[in-house]
Every structure is written in C-alpha cells, then in structure tokens.
Amino acid sequence: MGEIVLVRHGQANSAATTEEDYDRLSDLGHRQGGWLGEWMRDHEAPFDHVLSGTLRRHRETVAAMGLAADEDARLNELDYYRLSQAMLDRHGVPLPGPDDFADHMPKVFAAWHAAEIEGAEPYEAFETRVGEMLREAAVPGRRLLCVTSGGVIGMMLRQLLDLDLMKLSQVMLPIMNTSIHRIRVHPDRTFLTGFNATPHLDPPDRAFARTFY
Image 1 (cartoon, rainbow, N blue to C red):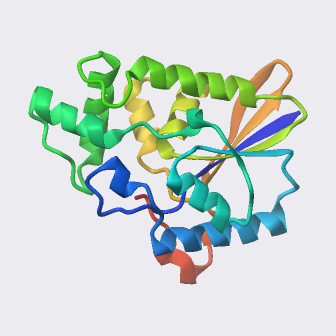
Image 2 (image 1 turned 135 degrees about the vertical axis):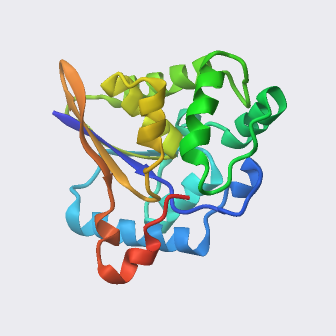
C-alpha cells in the first residue's frame, strides 16, 4: 500500500493581475509553508520521494517547509489569468473579482473544455499531463509528497472521482493554501482518503492564516 500526499502552495501574490506577477509567495505564504513543515516533521513518517512543480510559488513553498524536491512541470497550474482574458475577449465575461469565482470558474472550464478558449494550453493537454502524473505517482509501497496547485489537485480528484466540470469547479474553489490531500494507492486501485486538511493552521491564533488565494 502506498500514499500520495498533495500539498497546495502557500498564499501567493493575491493582488496580481497576471500569472507572472502572481507567481511568488506572500509573507504569509512563507509562514504557512513553515508551519506546515513543522507539523509534518512532528506528525508524518518520512517520504520516499518529494516532487514539486517548477513554478516559483511551488519552489518557495518547498523551501519554507524545509525540504528539497525534484521538479516536474506536470504539477504546474493552469493559467487562469489567460483563460479569464480569453473569456472576456471571446464571450464578454468580465474578469473575476475575489467574490466572483463561484460563478466565473464553471463558465471558464466549460468554454475551455469545449475548445472555445485555450489560454496557455488546451484543456485536453492539461487533463492529459495531470492524468499521466497521477498514474506515475501511484506506486504501491511508496509515500510521495507533491507540492502543486489547486487546479492540479482538482483535476486529480476529477479523475479519481469521475467529477463533471461543475463539480470540478466546486472542488477547486475551497482548496486552501498549504492544504493537505491524501490518495491511497493499492495494487489494483487508487482512491481519495483525505481532502483539504490544514492541521498546522488549527490553533485559534492562526485563524487569520486560513486563506484560499
């Protein structure tokens, strides 16, 4: 029996308007990563392998956790900024504010899936690379830690749970910064055993650090 532990990166630059500007941890994001690293050292058995995406926010989260990781670009996030701009250009859908994602995200995924918009990559390419990553990660007897992003985590859950696009959006929206998600690996099947846990942020004096973006 093996396990894949997925971690979303710490809070990034929430005031950004482009992917490039978003891709760096805030001061709070570094603190979240540090707290998660402390919690894992106290509560987790050692991992056989640690992977992260190649994005700066992934690498900074790994460093804040006190770990070293190999990098795999298949763990990189979809480019929601370019997709949002494409939705504006193609369908006139306004760019989302902080309170608009519950309505905006399902529309984006439906248009992306239908190849009406593309962004940095086609939907099929994103789904395929995440599926390949999940299959390669699912090694019985190995504990693997992957530091990645909410879209990748959501896509893995879509494939594990056969979620439609609306449910994929609903799963992605509440994924918290530095949250923990667990996938159990058996020789004949792989299934979800934990979602969106933040035990390192449970103390009341860390309530301010429970962030989504």
